[in-house]
Amino acid sequence: MTTWVFEGTVLPTGDRTRLTIGSGDAQTLPGQFAVPGLVDSHCHLTLGRGADGWPALFGDDFAQERLKELAAAGVSAVRDVGGNRSVTLKLATTEDDSRPLVLAAGRFLAPAGRYFPAAYEPVAPEELLAAVEAEIADGATWLKLVADFPEVGPDGPIRGSAMAQTYDTDVIQAMVELAHSRGARVAAHCNTDIASELIRVGVDSIEHGMALTEQDLETLGSRGGAWTPTLCASVSEAPDETPERRARRLARSEQTAAMLALTDRYGVRVLAGSDVVGSVAGEVDLLVKHGLTVTQALVAASTGAQEYLGLSGDGNLVTYAADPREHPEILATPASVVLNGKRIA
Figure 1 (tube, helix red, strand yellow):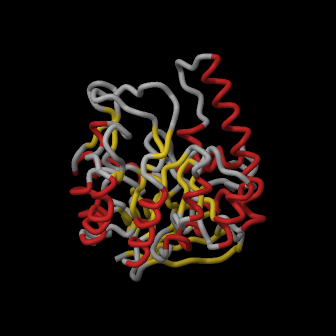
Figure 2: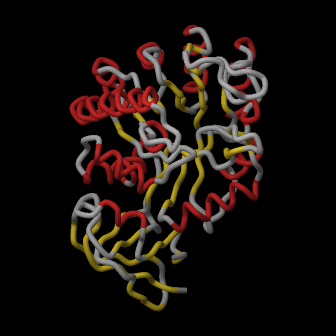
């Protein structure tokens, strides 16, 4: 056994201290700055691109490779918000200190024609409550509601770009009440102004949230809710971007920056999530570029997420050669990673 020793500045607090993890021969970790593990709060361990280029579900091998990549990047915990339930719920209910901790929502909850065909099994409105019961019975601590989405054809292409609500509000409210009565929480995919209704009926976190308003944030924050902007997925430039798509992306970016500036005022917990295309380090960088201080962004990616998700950073440490508060890009290249008491990088 080895005792890992770190002497330097621990972030986000900025306290200079000496930390020890483990029991045995002492070895000093490289780096002068550290965080007690990163958290990817919007992750899809089993979601990737199928042969046709559209999102599709993959199996355990795919998830394990993803977890290895996340661990090497300093991620000690992930909240999987939709995927192959047979894989993610097993990961969430199986102890394994060789990988990041997994919190899982199980399947995507959306009706027919309102999500990517190869990524989910449709849930009719009258079947939604039974589906919630099944996910929770199999270990889900979160439920993933696809609350708005464009109409999707049977082969994958989206028919137009107009998003619409997927389930009636009274059905969603019944779902949220059931989840809460069973001790689970609800994360809602939402990019339209139905966010106001979702927040009113009690969803716990808004995912993406490109149409949130100040009133939404005030209501969400009043009951300790969270927002995961997933900026890597929402505002990153696409290689084949048309002028129209660029204009829409820049508008989303501007709107998001305006709302992020209000989150501290209203007590909304901002979370960092990679989605399918990004990374926690990339998300922190974009959160800073959209108006958060580096410290606020680090909180969103570490201790703040741990607190909101009911996790502990004990046994986890990621060290860096330079100060991420001055060089946020350093988050992408840890000097060392200790996961569950074991050094893995």
